[in-house]
Amino acid sequence: MKNTFTAISKRNFITIVEINNPPANTLSSASIKELRSVFHTLANDEATRAIILTGFGRFFIAGADIKEFVTVLGNEAEALAMATAGQALCDEIEAMNKPVIAAINGPALGGGLEVALGCHYRIATEQAILGLPELKLGLLPAFGGTQRLSRLTNPATALEIILTSKQITSREAYELGIIQQVVTGEELISAAIKTAESFIEGKSMTSITRTIECIMQGYQEDVQHGLKRERHRFAELCKTNDAREGIHAFVQKRKPNFTQS
Image (tube, rainbow, N blue to C red; front, side):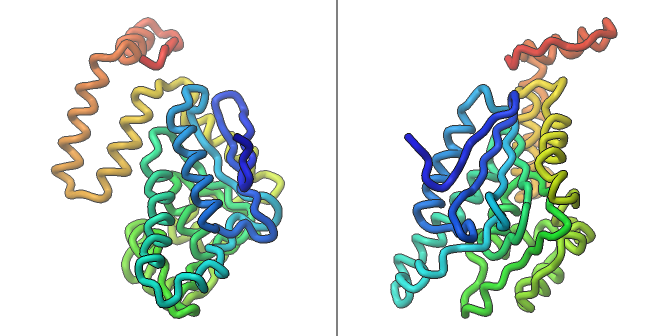
């Protein structure tokens, strides 16, 4: 089925998902549905070991489609469904069993920043701006922004960014730990690909998937639950062919030949 709001391309085992919903790549109910379908497909695609999410044109994602907000005014059930769908998209990205890198090519505002926060790693151009301006609409960030931003930074910083509704530069976001790399616009995709390659090259997906699970699930629970998951995943890996190959390759001073099993 042809995608309406996304373009998909591949570089070896890296899949690039480009959001294309002009003029500002806003998140409508239809584009959210398509993105969820795309990520569901990629989660089960053995030819995809890392994903880069970026935007077409000047915007990463300018936010949710404000025109759809008008349709839910006064209807709590429909508003709840809208927020639930947006949260589900961000939750599914965060729960992906392979690395997801947000390559922020332009403004990432409102729901756009919330989608980026759901990714595992974020790279932005020097010109990119980020913000959660929902309070100016009499609303609040409802695609996970209040929760992920406060966990990624701290409650005081999240309160400042959300309550002021201010836009911050990519450099400011880097200093706050929201962004992990700041590059020029020309370097963005190559930097994202290089980062993705560093995550997956010479490694087994059997260990990558479990590592992502331990980190992304662990930060939402107490340390003892996280440690329990960590030791159980380690024990599972010790039964895999790739662990056997990796350890033997290290002892024999050669590169491992992982079979992803």
